[in-house]
Amino acid sequence: MDVIRVIGVLEQGGGQLSALRLSVGLRAHGINTVRLLAGDATPGGVALARRYGVEVETFVDPERAEYRGLQWRDDPDFADWLAPRLAGADLVHAHMAGAWIAAAAVIGSDVALIASEHNAVTWPCGDFTSSAVAAASRVDAFFAHGPAAHKFAVSIGLPEAVLHEGRSAVEGLDATPLPGLATPRLTFTGRLHTEKGPDLLVEALARLQAPLCAYLVGDGPASAQVTEQVHALGLSASVRLVGWLYEPGRYVAGSSVHVVPSREEAWSQSAVIGLGLGVPVIGTAVEGLPLTLGEGRGVLVSPEDPGALAAAIDAVLDGSSRPDPAPGRAYAGQFTITSVAAGYARVYTAAVARRS
Image (cartoon, rainbow, N blue to C red; front, side):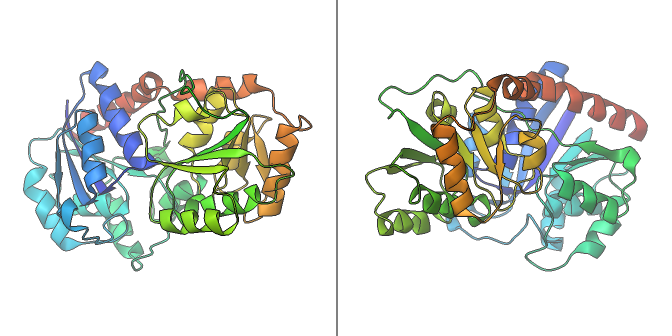
């Protein structure tokens, strides 16, 4: 089966890693991603796709940093660009609203269309609900990552029969610590973006009972803001901004506590890596995190509350609140590339059979 993958924005993020790892895992099932078509793109995102052996073509020039909001908007120019490039596929899998809305408008009637939504749909670039409703009738299967994405899919008229739980594969569950890291240490891995809450974590670090070395692994639009905050709070000696890495698990492995301080989070690969490595994970009780860290797997705190976050970190460090690592390891084991790809392969095969 030949698959063309379409993505609203190709950057170094969790949704993009999910799509690329899926492409790799599906090869064992005879399902080949022949190309990746991206709307918005960054040079780092293009390099990431190529690292996973996926050929990529972008609608915008990634070197010009021209952002058109194609993750979220109905863009007829993007759809026209996609039309000839979707030819020859047995199935198109489009990730993010702007991608599956555009693909639905131009895809052939004999080609299966799979849609994925990796985040809550908030329409930051304008309300395109009517476009999503129109596209819904063409979608053969919809993967909703998190409860907010599922609720949105139902709201645009998608029947439960075509809805599936979106599952992201993770890597690094067997990671070993990099030599020379501080012990004890706290870790954060993810995009430096306000929705991921790195500023909340830095504020919490300033409130700990005792200084703790912290590694913030990632990059993003809030990088300069977080760097400035670290300096302003006098944390430069203990907080290290590492930047984006291909193997963040090597910082997480062996750490004393791993923190996911998000303001928005459909499903956290970062949290699952921490669980899989047996590290205590603290996360905010937003959207999908209570499902990930529930049943004793992690520690949940109120969102937007650096004081509560600091108290939870102190409690893990002093041993008064330390989750049993066994349930977390078992949960994380469900999200290997092999197991996740098998589920998608079944849905792909059924969708192509119905269309043909």
